[in-house]
Each structure stands twice: as C-alpha cells, then as structure tokens.
Amino acid sequence: MDGLNGSVVSEFVLLGLSGSWETKVILTLTFSLLYLGIILGNLFIVFLVIADSHLHAPMYFLLANLSFNDIGASSTAVPRMISDLLKEHRAISFQSCMIQTCFIHALGGTEMVLLITMAFDRYAAICKPLHYLTIMSPKTCVLLIVMSWVTGVIHAMSQFSFVINLPFCGPNEIDSFCCDFPRIIQLACSDAAKFEFVIAANSGFITIGTFFLLLLSYAFILVTVWKRSSGDLSKALGTLSAHITVVVLFYTPCIFIYMWPFPTSSVDKYMFIVDFAITPALNPVIYTLRNKDIKIAMQRLSKRGHHDRFC
Image 1: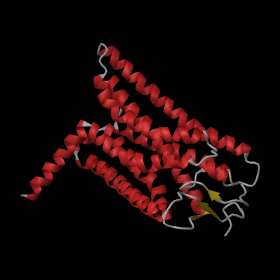
Image 2: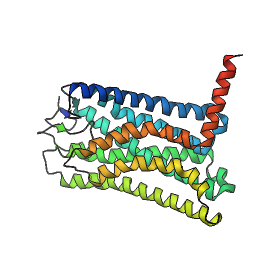
Image 3: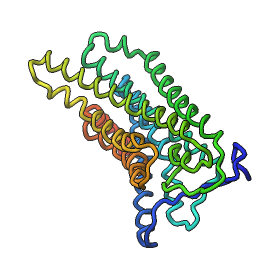
Image 4: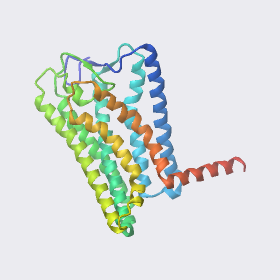
C-alpha cells in the first residue's frame, strides 16, 4: 500500500534501542512501570481536582488539564515503544507514522501553551490578588484551554501539510522510538531544504518562543514579589518552584531536539524518553510534594476513605 501522498514507501522501520535480550526485557519492564505511573499519577491528579471542592480553582483546573495532556502525549509514543522493544522488525505504516507525528506535535504544542497559561495564572494570583478571580474567571479558563488546544493543532497541521507532500521512495529507517517530522524529512527522496527550514522555524519558534515567555513571566513575578517584600523571595519561590521544575524538565529535551532539528546522532531519541516517559511520570510527584493544597486534599481524601470504611 502506498503512502498518503503516493510515495513508494509504505512503512517506516523504527530502529529504537539495540542490545541483548536481557537488556530489552529490563527496559520493557522499566518503561511499563513508568507508563503505569504516568497513567495512575496523572489520573489521580485529575480525580483529586474534580472530587475535592477546595481544588475548584483556576490553578488546579489548569493543572488537571496539564495532567490529562501528559497522559495523551505519553500514550502516543510509550506503548508502541514498549511493544517494539521485544520485536525484531519494528515497522510502522506510513499512515500510522503521520498520525503519530501529528499527535506528538499537537499535544506538545498544547502543553507549551498550557504552561504559559499556568504562568499567567500565577502572575494574576501573586501580582493582582484582588482581581485574581475576575481575571481568571471560569470563562477565561475555558478560553485559555481551548486556545492551547487550537494552537497545538495548528502547529501540528502546519508541519503536516508540508511533510505529507514529500515523496518517499528510498531509505525508510528512522533512528528513534517514534516518528517525528525532522526525522521523516531526512528520508525524503527530493531536495527538501526549504521544507527543512519551515519545519525547523515552526518547531524552533514555538519551543524557544514559549520558553522565553515563561522565563520572562517568572522573572517578572519574582521581581514584583521581591520589591513588595523588601527582598524576601521565599514565598514566591515556594509557590513557583513546582512550576519552574516542570518547565525545566519539559523544555530541556525539546530545546535540545529542535535547536538541532536535523540530527546526525541518535542522542535525540534519548531526549524523547525524557519528554514522553520520565517527565510525565515526575509531574504528579512534583506537584504532590511541593503543593500544600494538594497534600491537604490527599489527607482529606484519605480520612474520607477511612471514615467510609468504618461506617
């Protein structure tokens, strides 16, 4: 079966990791546990925000959406990565490869905008406390979530529209665990220089652009608090520490991959592991350990469960 654009190539081969059978079994178990942690941890955050009325606030509404997005992002790559580890022939059809890539970029773009909306929420809470509930009204929160998803979809489809028209008639091996536009473009059998520039500009712009916006947002919040509290930044740092940690974990691999969007080494596939398997597993832990309201909500849930058991 030919590809969507009439290419000769009907499937791509994902090289993934090479190693002994024992190594692959250990990696399969490790990634399976990580994926289980991603699903359970992030679903727990979503459930807690819905179930506990004390968490019915803009910050936690955005956090629940971030957790939901993390589940989707990891699910686009990790299950296939796990199943492919024990296979000799790791083939993915042309259509499935394009669909996977679109989902990866749509959910990745959505997460970047979500992190900006969470930074804006913290700005409103810390710098405009008297107007916080007016600024972050339920309507505004929903609008910000919709805007995040629309931005992510536009980001993915703008790249897809370029890549889908390229002819693929030669090599079909991708040195990674999953499909991604920079890797796919390298396999095109035409002069794809202009498409490489468009893809690099698109991914690079949204990655670097949103990262610097976040840096500026948090810097502005810290400076504002520092001026108001006569040099005491402890409260602001305590509030923002979880957010800043998540931003660093998410953006470090993204910047590494898309600052050099057409790599000659295989290091970027390990960055994918960080972004799609490790960071989504750590996010619930980070927000649980560093957020007082989440800890209190967990205690209330535990007491409620204990009370219901003995009633």
